[in-house]
Image (cartoon, rainbow, N blue to C red; front, side):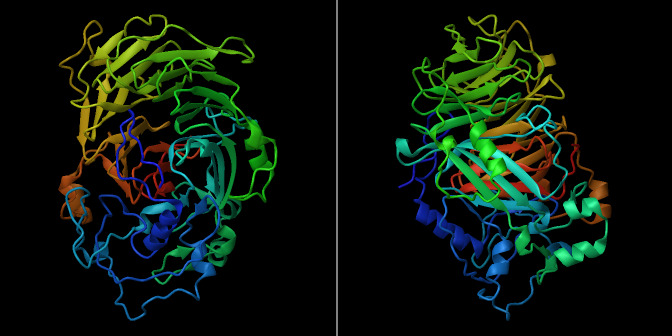
Amino acid sequence: MAPVPKGKHGKRRGKPGPPRAALRAAAAAAASSADALSTSPSTGKRRAERDAVDAREELDTELVFEDPYGDEFDDENKSAVDDSAPPIVDPMVANDAVVFRPGKDRVADGEKLVCDESAYDVFHKCMVEWPALSFDFVCMDGGGMYSNMEPAVMDTYPMSVTLVMGTQAEHANKNKLVCVKMSNMHRTRGRKGKGIKTTREHDSDSESSDEEDEEEDEDGMPRASPDKNAILQSFDIRMDSTLNRVRAMPQRANIVATWSESGRVSLVDVEPALNKLNLDSKRRMGMPNTTAPSATKPFFAFNGHRAEGYSLDWSRAALGRLLSGAVNGTIYLTEPSSVEGAAWTTSPNRFRGHTDSVEDIQWSPNEPNVFASCSADKSIKFWDVREYRKPALSVSMAHSTDVNVISWNRNETHLVVSGGDDGSIRVWDLRTLDKDGNNESAKPAAEFVHHQKAITSIQWHPKDSSMLCASSEDGSVSIWDLAVERDAEEELREGVVLTGAEDFPPQLLFIHMGQTNVKDAQWHPACPSLIVSTAQDGLNMFQPSNITLPT
C-alpha cells in the first residue's frame, strides 16, 4: 500500500494511495477516458462520447512519461477505435456550450469529462514511482551556472525542464531526493504557442517545414512525430524519510534544502547529479545509478525543531539565508557562517509568536531581514530577523480556518496572497495594515472563493504582478489575473456567453484538472507560461494556450 498523502501541517488527508501497479493500471484506463479536465471558463465543455480503448504498451521504468501523442505513433495499428461512432461536434462551434462547474455539476450517466487539448500549447504527464509532496526548479543562467535568479530565457521549442523533488515512499528507507530532467518537450496539441517558436521555426519561418514535421489527427489537431517524444532522465539521492518540502537556493540552485518527516532540515549539493544529467544525453529514467551522484549525502543537517515541518524558504535578497518552520510552531534561521559557504550554522534563537503549526514561510523579495509566516492558528505574521521575540506585524484572523500557504509578490512588494484550508484565496495590501496592532478586523484587498477544498500551494507569477496560480486538494490548479474585469457587452458581441459562466469569477483564466491530491504547483522561472504540478499520481507539465506572459 502506498503512503497516505499528508496535509501541510501533519494531518493525513485523502484516501490511501494505491500501489504502483494500480497507479499504472489507472493511468492506462485514463487514456481511454478523461486524461484530465483542463479548461478555461471561456472554452470549457462537457460532452458525451463513446468509449474508445487504446492498447498501450507499458514501460518498465520508475518514472514514465505519459506522452499522449508519441504512443499513438507506435501503436497506431493496434488502437481499437469505433469508426462507426458519430463525430463529436464542438459545442463551442455549435454555440450550445455548457460550462462544467467543478464542485457544483455532476457527470451524468453516459457522459464523461474530456480533456480539451486545444486549451494547451504544451501538456505532458509523468507517472512517478512514489508521490512527491514538493519539488523545485533548477535553472541555468547565461553563464552556465545553476541559478534561479536570472535564468536563461526558454523561448523556443523543444523545452527542457530540470527539477528536484522529494518522495513519499511506503517505507522510510526507500525515500530519495530525485533530480529529474525532462527534455525534448515539443508543442503538443492546440495552436502554436503565442510568442514561442519551435527551434526550426526560430531558424526559418517556412511553413513547409511545419507541414513536413507534423501530422494531423482525424480531428485536425497536429500530432507529434516520433522524434518529438519527450525524454526523461533522473538521478536518485537516498534519504532516510519522507521529504515534506524541497527548495533550491535561488542564487546557487544546486544547493537544495529539504525538510524531512524525521524532523531534520538538510542541505544537499546536487551539482554532480545535475552535471551527469546534462552531459549524459543517453541516460533514461529507471537506469540504475552507477556513478558518484547516487552516493551524495547532505553536508549539513539541523534537528533543533524536534518535530517535522513543511515551511521552508531561501532569501532572494541575502545569499544563503534559509528559514524553516515546524508543526510545533517553531521557526529557525540557518545561514552560512563563512563567506565561501563551507560552514553553516542555525541560530539558537527561535522566532516566537505562533501558537500552532507554521504552515508556510516567505522571505521578502527585496528586504534581507524581513519575512512572513502563516499558521494553523489562522494568522499571518511579519518578522524582522533581528527581533525574534515577537513579530513586527500580525493579521490575527487572516482566514477563518488554517492559513496553509502564502506568496509574496516580487513585482508589487506590498502584496501578499494567502490560501486557506477552506479553499479561499485572499490578497493582502500591507499598506493598509495597522503597524501597531493585531489587525483582528483587517479586510483583504481581494478575496476569491472557487476551490472546494484546501489550498495546498499558491504563487505569484515571477514577472506579471497581477497573475497567480493555486493548487487545491479538490484536484485542480487554477490561474488568476487580478487585473481582469468582466465585460458583458464584449462577451455578447463576441458570442462567448456560456450557460454557467457567471458562476466563475472573471479573474479566473484557466482551470487544470485530472490529478489526485495536488500538493504543489509552480510557474517555471525561465518559461513564464509553463506550470508544473505534483500530485499523488505524478507530475503534470502544461502551458495554457490562452495565456501570453512576458519573459
